[in-house]
Length: 533
Image (cartoon, rainbow, N blue to C red; front, side, top):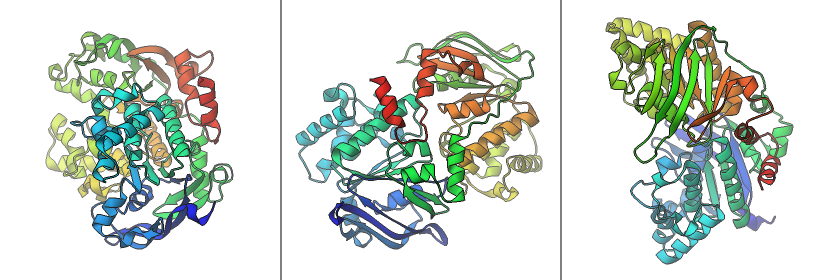
């Protein structure tokens, strides 16, 4: 390629937040149609670099040095208005959570067409025609009318593709993908990855692809940059990084992604701790989201519930915890029948079932200290004094391998992995028998996610707690769960011991899930798509 194909040059970029350096001396070049993958653990600087390429930083941060040259112009020399003009037509951003990024009060047509119309690039009618064309390219249903829907009226995978259409509407030179498939199940992830790659190839759009999953980035990136603590650790072709990494840290990332060992839990073989029998549950507009589900969890069990988006996994968790009252069936905890709704359960029944959430950023009150967050269930369930609460919180922090000094910090002063440990400590503060883990590692990078899995396993061995583990990551299931239930359209279609369910002959849907787990080779996506034709 010629020099004219270069659309972005990042030269010795430095981003700081006060005295803290978030990105230090990072450089790379991006050519038209090429994709660079940014890999690294939480806090490595991946998203900070991606946002800087739009001339943007988070509150409290500033670009402290270097150059970001877009088509010959250093965007750091532009005025605020100049940088705003760049965003959309020049560089566009695709966020991790489409559901949190769309305006729920506007149709998809209104939001996809807004950028090209606002920048004066085309009329509303022309923008609408472009939107329809993009919907068709991205294999969205009924492209002529798809945009009439509101965000809540489409699935997660469809909404993520609609966000790609919104980013492409102004025909940008560069797309910044920020963990765009992390929250998707494996079958939907295949479809979305294929759509993204098709879009990049057909429009020759350059892209920066931010992710913590090496197997995912292998399907779409030409080059990969590995980052840690804001600095570049290694930079090479995707093939070289995946097959022959030079640096120890990169080798650890690759080894973790291909790890095959198991941390399978063992149940005590006693009576069922949790018994769910023929449970049915619905939402007002969605009848029978849970349709006759039965399962058992024994003390010391880790039962993984897997399935694609919309299969009913998280709804089942809400029903078990009483957040969504069941319509029929029975749930027993330690032999006691639980009321359908949380309000009808005793304080002791509430204490015995706790929950750890997927997104600690949302689950933890940003205005409270760690002491307040972990201490609240201690005071609520046990009526302890302030001094007793503080002593117990310190004990839980030690159990979580967190420094005691964190007790006076707020969530904003913690990393993603540290926040998730605080969420685990809050659940354990109630001294429960059963913890419902809802996608607790999906938002974390591989190494931090593995630390959380090891922590959960250690706590189970020490405390005898049982887990109901909701996840779309089958690699996690194999490492932590001794039992698995596979859900499809509100029903359990396969269940039993993990090694039995995941051994041939598979249920057809289980086989589809297993075949959709990305592998560490660049031709994997092509093979999967070929099999599905």
